Amino acid sequence: MNDGTRMKRALAKLVVAPMLEAGFTGSYPHFRRTAGMKMELVSFQTDKWGGGFLIELASCPSKNIRDWAGQRVAAARVTAHHMAERIRLPKAINRRAWYRYDKSTDDARFDKIAKQALTHLQRHTAGLDLL
Image (cartoon, rainbow, N blue to C red; front, side, top):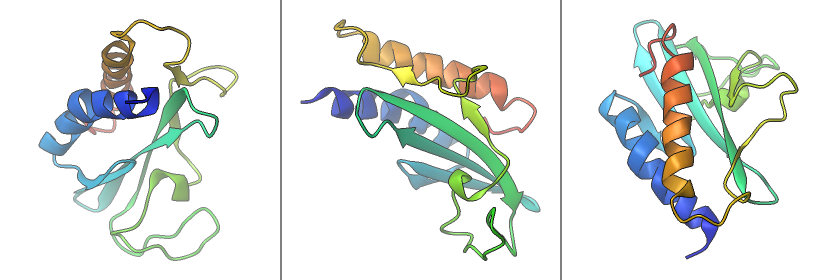
């Protein structure tokens, strides 16, 4: 099993499972939850070269959704990437921070990074009531 698959499994167990329990729907990499008149969005983005990922958080109206360019998007298909305003985790000054799992060979790194991502997700979504 390659490292990307191992990281995805750790995320499914330690991050996605609590999100689904909290009412999110969807499948990796895009999740959404309707909360009254708004929809909360969480999207995972993998590094195209491998070895890392980041998480983007956004919200939008639950109806009449328009993307950053003003185009209509169906509620069942909207992702955080459609929104102009979004939060990127891990948060960094240079906006180039990623959760990296290719910097170590420790077998425990996948669970450790997934737990770190969950902690950041919970901390940064406290005001958004995502988790």
